[in-house]
Length: 244
Ligand code: MLT
Image 1 (cartoon, rainbow, N blue to C red):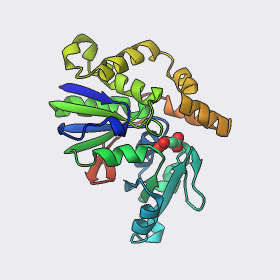
Image 2: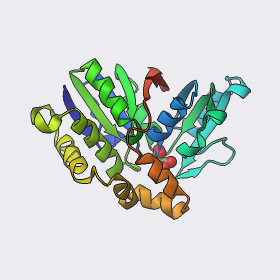
Image 3: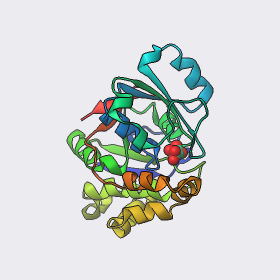
């Protein structure tokens, strides 16, 4: 397997198609997607734009749908849910279709939706993603961070590095296809024992803590490695369902 890491959706090349893309938004979209599917949501359908989400969701039966919207770390007014993974409990989401739009995470999913296999990763499902990639044995995999409005984010890159480390790339450096992949592995090797502290230092971690100290519990949850055994996988463009 050969791995390329891109810090943001904007960095993803316009030409060339890998076998698999792994979309990453540790704080918090891909943590929340994994949590929703592990809690029994029927699927998560993602949108870059809120208006499109509202239009498409209307065609789904009202008792079977939940609208999830986040902008700037806060819940969008009038939506059922924001982007805190802790709100996605089985009681709330079981058998429901989640129509979701977030600031960056859903944009990165949209950027890679044409790639043959698309999955999502976060620290909470690192081991499940590791097992999936080992079992599939793809030739080329793109690890795509979401960043923040086009800029690098520590938490997505450390997660990419965690995937590379779990797959043993530190012993097979030839598997690292670009400088970003080498740097991601090094970031993970430095911080693997203290991931919560890294999330607290990150600019989006600081943003969330600035919105409210209660977001400390979200950071702790998002740093809780291997908590979930689910692999969210794209089953139709923009629609993710559970692969365990
Ligand atoms: C995003 O998509 O930018 C994030 O998931 C923001 C967040 O809710 O923390």
